Length: 412
Image (cartoon, rainbow, N blue to C red):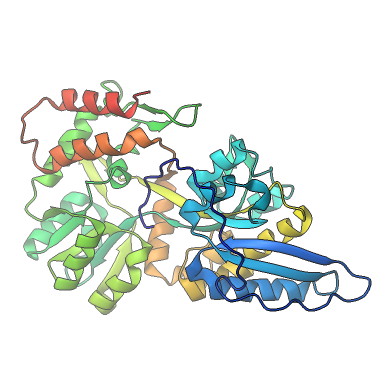
């Protein structure tokens, strides 16, 4: 995720041809043992997870070998398009599937997911934010798989003292002294949420699941919308601030012009390669707003595993989903794929905690909110933030710009 996070409703009805090992030709099935039935399951997962999924499925089959014979087929299916592929034909869809958390409400509403029977065990085992991401109105519909779709601050430790990265004003001042840039992408509402999220100003989905409510133009309370807008203008005025996309951030890291920036775990390897032992990562800093230091917020997201409500083997499908998301499986996923665990014990492991990027993401998770916004959110927020990044070149009233943004975000 990368960021990700503009999800549009589409209608697809294509189900991928059956593949084993997520891309390998299907081998002839062994004859079932006498007196035992064969359990047939189809699993959808990301193509890049093929080897990992095959390893986990093999361990599942070995563990339950005394109870049934298995014929488990794995198909390559990206998480972001899972909902549309599944809803194209639920009865022909996978029994077990990986998907992005912003699809859970639509899948539950369509009857593709049933509430989990082992919900209490899942809640006890997993991070609360991941459980929330897998739930609709407090009911758990899927198994949390990862909890790493968010953002935090990368910084070059050769250029900053630890106290510099705690506050945005100190960060920018230190970067100016070092003649380097601090990067953040204000072209995406996903990142711009950072400034509004902990102010008491709100945004989210209405009960219809499509339209938004938004109070970012609020004039009452300790922090008004214009206070946030002014804070953004103050940051943009720093010569060491750079509004650039995630790709441009990485290019700046590699050429040495960017010495700190807001991004996610998907860039951890590249940042480490560029900065070596000086690569650092921490939660987002505070920023000055309405005369106070306010902790920057973040949107967050997870990958989930669902069980098709139309599965012909619902009990075995649920067992497999639980196996794929177990503590041991999530530890293996981190080791092989670098993905942040949703399982609490796996997330607290020494291996995960030794990852600066994952540790920073977990620290930021205290100040994060699961992304739940409708499509009208993105462009108006991007347009507003572009004006702030450019120093409000039109000279228009900040309140008027906020009012216009909110009008478009909440349009029905």
